[in-house]
View (cartoon, one colour):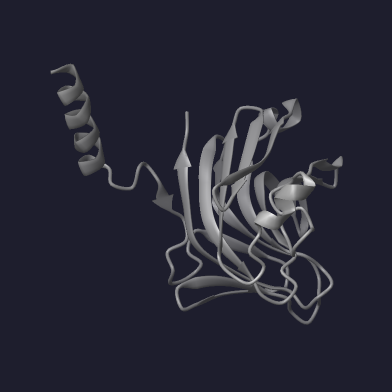
Length: 199
């Protein structure tokens, strides 16, 4: 009877919340709920969010209007031209100078899934060399970022990349942002951006 109740409870939870508590924060139609920072290009194409270098070839960001403290973020990305980008957590911005922590999204062997502190301590942690091969350079990649208290854990294509505990991160609060690196020639596609807020 005990096991039957557990099974029934599982099916009841699944039926009442088929999303598992995740909410889409990109609607596939427009940039509602997001803010563009800088002159680089952000647009929707085929229900995918595209970031692309503009003529100024500077840093560009697309940030959520809402702040997120503790959460699990899931998304998919596909690198096209160059692909040097990233996902910022608990961040703030003035112009295009961003403060916060970036989960790297970059071409092969450039530490996708690692954590970098912008305008601060620089690289906090990089994936081990063997994990650099988990990235799919020419296909869609699944990324998962879990931020709870002072701990950040990242996954790429189902495999854990890094885990970092840091007091400064734990004290911060801010938005999530996608990045275009400076230098020009960058294009990245994003889709299925979903978040589950945690207590």
